[in-house]
Length: 218
Image (cartoon, rainbow, N blue to C red; front, side, top):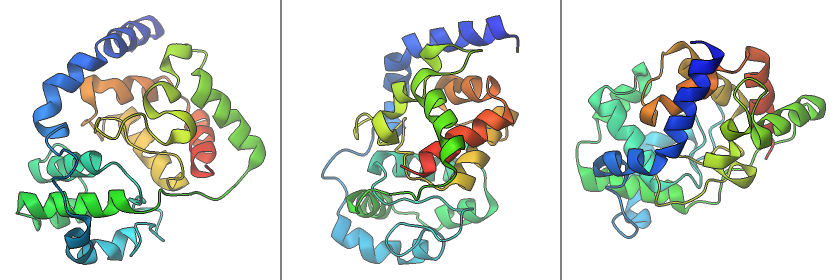
């Protein structure tokens, strides 16, 4: 993809973000506030704790933190693993074990009810470079590609009712790097209108590492 075509695709994607959300809301917006029971979800989430931690903070960077993540995002991503829209040997198998929709809503509500994920400071110099990218975009795609536009200040999201744009501030550095590289390579394709793919394809590996360093420290 050329610089010009990448910018054009991203502009169209960003301008039509509302339409993209509406088109996917049967899945992404199908979990509304009050539909999941976090108390019931705590017990049902016991099998998830081995990878994601008992309190939603994973000790293994291969698995994401879920503490404080939007319930609708967890719900949608799990459905994507079940439907084959997103692939991972471990998660696809685990997601397939949650066959009851209410169980999934309860589990999602439980993780959403926990204190929001909090990262740990790392390389300050690298994080500073990542902060600039997060807030202003990069020179190839321009400031309209800035991560803050969809993921909010400090990476804590914009709206819990919008399951398309997750909380990423405080997420595991290595996990963030992998997801961005997967979007860049096409290994992950369940982003709405290929929005993340376009952004990631416009980033160098060094930029991906820098922005991940910044986010993981929030």
